[in-house]
Amino acid sequence: MKGIVVKLGGSTAGHDEMKVWIAALAGSSLPLVIVPGGGPFADQVRSAQKGMGFSDAAAHAMAILAMDQFGHVIVDSHKRFSAAHSIEEIERASAVGKIPVWLPSALATPAQDIPASWEITSDSLAAWLAGKLGAEALLLVKQSRAFTGDDGVADLMARGIVDTYLAAMLPAATGLYVAGAQDTGTAAATLSSGRIPGIRIVDGNPMSKAG
Image 1: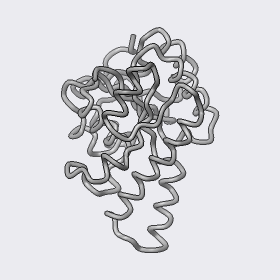
Image 2: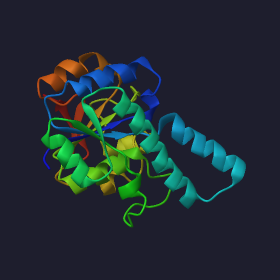
Image 3: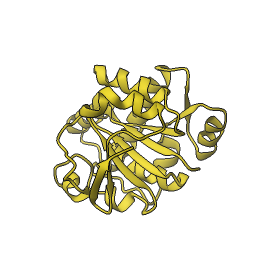
């Protein structure tokens, strides 16, 4: 599949930015697959692990289920969105003009090439899915403003804007874009015109504004 994988950060959950991005993604003229972050559902896993002391392996599985939960919230927010558990379901939804929202637990939990660690976040899972789909680009939607056109992948990893596995998980043929709060106001027009919001990063060096 050629298209764009979009990770919608769980940090947007419950904020006005989430509604704006939902509307922008739903109006996209580009073929998209949405990957949900974990958001408040993953926060509950972290809290429970501290209190109950279960392993990181168990927490990893539960955090992926937290992405499923936020995914259901996203699916419920617009009629164009469709829940997808598998590559086949993603392709079927895309073929009829729907925007699939990947619920990752069925594919990602048993995957041997995804470490069971808190260091793996939805950023790297989105990059992993981009590889499975042969996606041409990965867009990470953040609520942060803490990046600029001078940042590369290493800078983003060092500051915790993306996780430390992202560079290893991202396929060489998949372009990386990062959008933040500064892109919220123009996201709908950008996506509806067939362009990708945010800053494009290639070989660790950001290019000019997308489009």
